[in-house]
Length: 517
Image (cartoon, rainbow, N blue to C red):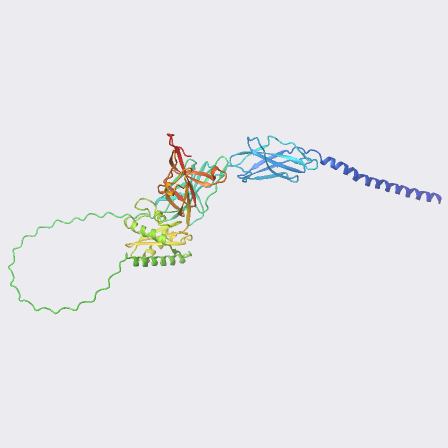
């Protein structure tokens, strides 16, 4: 009995002892961890090892291995070869990758090399790791800039495509499509030294008379295999109709008449007695005079009829009616007299027909139709039943119309917002314009998509310098003066698909050679 009591007592003591030990361990353990953790967190982080840097046309992504004891990472970059690092960002230690997107503050330029490195930081110990002083370098792919394209129909089977220079382009790819398709077809691949391509009709890449085509050009960099952007709509070209061949009339040869023998004079007849005068007939009423078809009132009536019949055709083919425009009418009136003497979309002076409408103050010209006919209804009927003319007449982009008529020669012209204007800013680049009161710059309002003759722009003057031409520029805050040169203009024409700025170029008169400024 006593032995049993003693055994129970011993078991109780053993159990209580074990509980005491466990309690002690529990109390001691947090103290151990609390004392070791701060000591570990204050240690200097290990140097981050960069694994790779990849690049796109406007970004670079840096990846690295985890750094021990790091609470954050700081990413640096510099242009390859430079001495000074630039801080890009500080990010959490949870991230082991950072993407640097090009910005105004931290730019990336195509074709340039950039070097990246990473440092780790421990906020508890306020300690920085070392870093890879060489870093890892990557090249940003050079992407060609967008070009501005212009197209001119030389005749019914040939066009000329020209474009502005593209930065970073090693080649230019030329495409075209007909108005009734959205698929582009590449027709040429030319070097960056070429800014023009003549498209001659061929079996593979045809150009059909009377049809409408669109052209676009995009830059290509073969080193980086990158393509530049492009206009999804393209630039329109209206191919003229094939001129009718008028056969030369054979000269009329009159047969030589056989001489008639001289007749003997007949004896003079005996005069008959004078007849009694007949009564005077009642005068007939005067006929109504035929209206002059070229009178202002009649021309006005004919123009309205052409517009009426044209809109009937447009509605029939699912296009919205067009509205008459005064500037288009003025240009069409000029063209009607021109096609009376030269039936062509080329003007008598050799220029494109669109110049007549730009001169009249209209812009955004789409298509011109010409024909002959004795009535407005007949003229519209002929256009409707010609595939090429019908395409222009029912163009859904057209919003306005102009009509001209002269001696049964008819012209209709279509445009999209013809009253739209762009601003041409002309900058003397250190000189002045005497004709503008000594101003250094002035502005001109120009019809949208028009061609401006540079010879019509006032020439500036600059002391000790000679004016040698114009450079097209655009606003860019990163360049001195806020202007970046696009292209030195060698032709006499300036195309206006948007507002533009021209900068004068000078040469020192003391220098025998001319050089642009």
